[in-house]
Length: 375
Image (cartoon, rainbow, N blue to C red):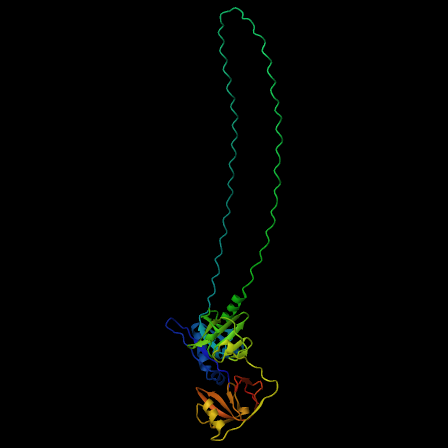
């Protein structure tokens, strides 16, 4: 059975237009039923001068882009996505930034000549001292008796010449400061940025979840130290960060690809957790027989997996399709297949190797068909 893909189509035409989302299955694309809708997107984008943005796994790029361009020569932008679905929307083209205006060169400023220094004024000569007045001649007196000779004054002390000034010490060069290394990039922040870009179109996550808050069909993505959870809510997928440690070998988690796990059931308390067991290397053959009316095993399987209704159809092993679910009993097995919005049930008629690559164990007696070539 083909993978189920959800196509969400966003159309932006004018201020009066509202965003629309359309869900299509992979069967619609393969059969051509989706061609008209994808072509209409291409035609609308070409008419309004917008571009069509496609978020899808890489293997779907060429197919979806060709169906969009069949409606008109619209520009198509392709982005890789972890989701097993395709999101198509019509978006405004990014406007090219206007080139910066050239800066006019500054006008050269002519240097102003420095003013000529004024000549120093010559020092004024000191005024000449006034002549002393002439002494008045006293009247002559009798000659006085000469006093005894005064003692000679002591010689003035000799002051030694000042010592030459000591030269200042030479400046000591400061050692060069060590170059600081650039801080290492935060691996958690880098991983979150990658997951937001690939899973949420670069938008921030909605919040955080604990392992006990995980529900069926949540998908866990692991990028180094970071774990992200995508959850389908109201026709859109929201991104959350998963807190705490979780054993990715738990039986409630089904590996989808490298570092990607689907939550198959609500996680029980860690002390009661069971882990996935590796399938034996050799084949595990089972032969499905159609039980007779009134058989006890028939009644038990119809009650458990057929809503208590009688199962009347049969399917051979080579008629199993991808996404079928096989519930194995002792001698009989019921196959549940989704046909549109209904679930159709069959008795498995024939021998099958339960350890082959086309089957994936999903419980004690439950197997999912993951290939169209089951033998």
